[in-house]
Length: 522
Image (cartoon, rainbow, N blue to C red; front, top):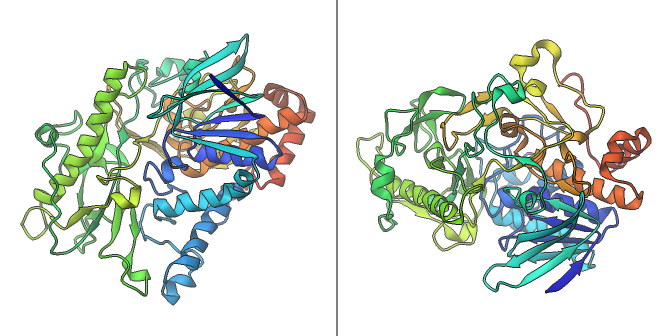
């Protein structure tokens, strides 16, 4: 088997993996970065999820690297698209005008920007990207990982990767079990975590739902009805445990109050009903001076295609494939329902002008290359972030919890989508939060670091630490941490335990534009 070597091995090319590879390379490391699909970027690209961000994102609350990414996206539109003068001169340009994000944009633009950011390091040989490779084995010795073996999809070719540090940036924390790293998955019991909203009983298979996003535009008067999906009858009749209505319905779980249903509708209206089409809309034709698009394009990641029938890891390969297929079928069934049976305000049914846009996501059927996975295996960490660290309800007037070992900041509500066993959902307001270094350190293994949503959170706090800016920040912090350890001949655990190392590492982060603490007024 062929062997490859680098200073830092990053397994997984989502946002966290891309950010960690970029950080390590900027710090002088040789990096090998692997990715299961043929697109880097994870949530933003192959999973089709526009950035979920907090209200301060334009001025504070992310790393300089993430802000650079955001401004490069806007610059890409200004440089390459025929924008109206109003759009071109808007410093806060939101290309799709999606209301969930201040920067709803096309996945292909995000992909181009990320590749451009990596280009100096890829072209110089400092970063090597291996596409369509997934981890299949790991070799360990004592408390250290010696190598990770990856296999290429389609060819079966295997490579053994060796390095000083290994960063697990896979969507499900796939390296953790391979390398024998202690981890938690699914729901912990409240008796374990001391959290008000944790599950009554622990269940490792009770995980947040996944969503197989699809892209579509709307062409008035068109008919793009797809073939009836094989599981359409199943999904049309499926009733979640928290509802008396079928899942394919305009009345879906209220994301801000999981005890009730909320009415939605398709398009913006004057009836005061929340519209879903412009929720994650990524193309607004009105900002262009040429007719580039026949209609507005959206990415469908709605309550109606959250898949919570079963988990896709911690189970047999047969069970995993069953649920991956089920998630795809649910999204195709939602598309077919929208085209044929969705009630319209005028009393009619169906919007046949809804057209799947596979070209937007680099696929044939309009579905994303990979499902959006909200919850990963999580390391058993030196420090575990719990609801008590972030919840407004629990902390009261105490405000943001400041960590001496902070490696970044973020903000998002504790947003737990329906889970695969109990189908429980949570929405809890939180204070802006910080990311403690202790949450990036496994309790035992010395040279493996989490680099995305597999840090030391609970299932509950994963609900706010899993979003785009935070994942990027975690990746950057992990990349710089691995580089610092190599350059200073120490271990990441030493960095937290020894004041001189912690101070020097945090100074390194600050020099690279990582914000460590929230201002008092936020």
